[in-house]
Image (cartoon, rainbow, N blue to C red; front, side):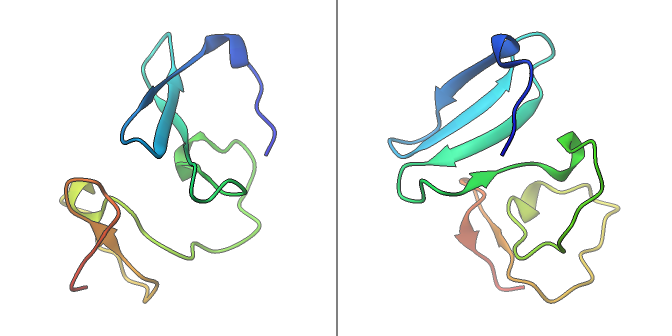
Length: 89
C-alpha cells in the first residue's frame, strides 16, 4: 500500500486492536489497520484514485450502507456496531 499526504493523516483506536486513519482536514476515513492482521489494511474503495485490480472479497459495515444501495453479489457480508460482525445475508 502506498500512501501520500501522510502529514494530513491522524488516527484513533476504535478498539484495542483496530486503528482508523483519517484526514485531519476533512475527516474522511482513509484506511484502517488491525493488529491481528498486520499485513492487511482496510481501504474504502472511494479513496482509491486508480481502478480496482480485483473484485471485493468481503463487504463490511453493511448496516451503514446507503439505503438505496443493493449488494447484489455473493461475497461475505459483515455489519453491526463494529461493522465486522457476521450478518445473516
